[in-house]
Length: 338
Image 1 (spheres, rainbow, N blue to C red):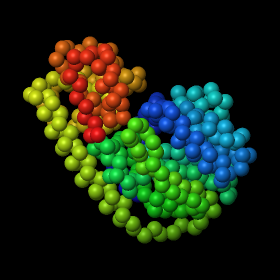
Image 2 (cartoon, rainbow, N blue to C red):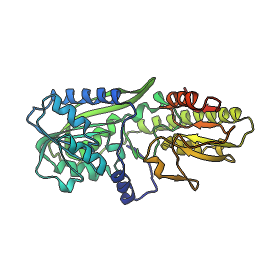
Image 3 (tube, rainbow, N blue to C red):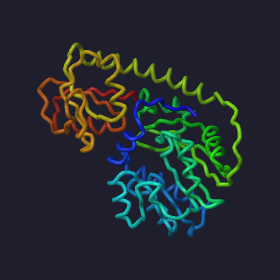
Image 4 (cartoon, rainbow, N blue to C red):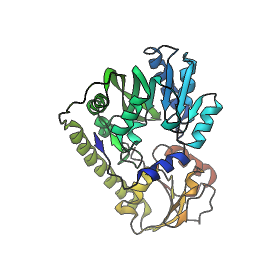
């Protein structure tokens, strides 16, 4: 496993997840992905299984599990907003492992393990929630294929994704936690128009195997080094594009304050620029401050002649169209690499 040496304590990270809830950018695509997971699980577990969705967010996967026949559905979600939304769908959702009661037949960890600071401790706790012979479904980004889907520089090196797995490393982590693999595979998630995202998944049964030594596997290190080279080249190209389009202008507004924006703002091209406004449509982001300025909504009035630099890849088409309708003379610079 490759992991990020983050400069943040676990309490602060936990506080962040308790205040926020992650909503997918494209509901239709996300629903299709969750439906696929639910349909898969319906083939490997009985409808009567007691199921726990770890990091269930607003309960959408639980809802799809209900549609395919599961009847005993539970969740754990640190975000108050997410837990409330999932409870509103009729599910028993707790805020932490400590609040859960009883053991489960199936635990689902769907795009959660990459966020966890201490993987071994988390998987040990997960094993403690399962009945003997119970199973766990895990799905995470596929770090072996990051470079194949590098639409943006450093797309997969964000502040939330701490851990980066290959299928080999994910299986090794599960085996060390007492699980035996039943199935595994790779998939490509349809995240947005012209944007695929690599993922791996697996199903493991809890058998409490004795501890064992894991031999080093350097393939993921080499894949990560290649991804760094690819991202560096993309970043250099975007920096050159930005400076060319600015043509000597030094004052800009930036749009889209996600985690990729933080990396782009730290690039050499932004040094010496005056950021007159940080703009994002997400009300949660509008609670944040950057460079002493609070993030503002899209309706914030900008002075004539100030270009807007779009820092997000996923929504750049929609944002470009928005300015074409509402502020047609505004110079909009797209930093999406495709």
